[in-house]
Amino acid sequence: MNLFILTGAGVSAESGLGVFRGTGAALWKRYDPMQLATPEAFMRDPALVHEFYNARRRNLIAAASNAAHIALARLEAGLAQRGDSMTLVTQNIDDLHERAGSKRVIHMHGELLKARCASCGAVRDCREELSTDSRCGCDGALRPHVVWFGETPLYMEEIYAALERADRFVAIGTSGAVYPAAGFVREARARGLRCCEVNLEPSENAAQFDERRYGRASEIVPSWVEEILAR
Ligand code: APR
Image (cartoon, rainbow, N blue to C red; front, side, top):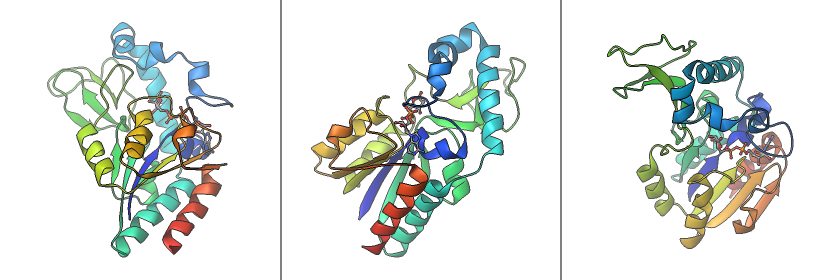
């Protein structure tokens, strides 16, 4: 078995980090992403963008992984033990998969606990607040190491190579609204993979999945993991 797992904000929702879209409270209902999560927004008002990500970084540092993250870490270890494998790709910029014990996590939208120099591109760890005074060694301005709207996600070659090797695709806690991640299920189907969706509610591309399980990630993911490991 070679699983390809894509996670989104729904997997971290019960850790208190909030989601961007969906029927309940959502970040992009309260805030305009075009004012906060684009390169143009950062050029126009870097202090405002820093303030938004500083608040999210503070929340993340205070948060903890939940049962869904823990189950996925257990799945990685359990599959490895019996010679199977999985690739975990996340759209999340938090580190809750890692804190739960996942060894290999591909952060296609970057990482909140890292900063990147807007001039030389150097990436470094960042747990502190960033401001317009935050500078790289080369004197370039530091920005959050996150992929904004209009920017290309990271590790795409590696991700498509993993999709090619996979024999099963599972999307967990993602609305299916943001490409290219929202297009992975189509790629997977075209390759004949069985596709499963785990989410609180049907995603925008729910019809493309062979199997759908709806409910809270902290409940559905652990039971699904037990099923997979029992096979
Ligand atoms: N368990 C499972 N799913 C949940 C839960 C929960 N407890 N709570 C919410 N959800 C679902 C929502 O119903 C929604 O369908 O998780 C999904 C989260 O969707 P989004 O907020 O759109 O998150 P995501 O798909 O990861 O967003 C993609 O959009 O703005 C960007 O860069 C940001 O990476 C993000 C990208």
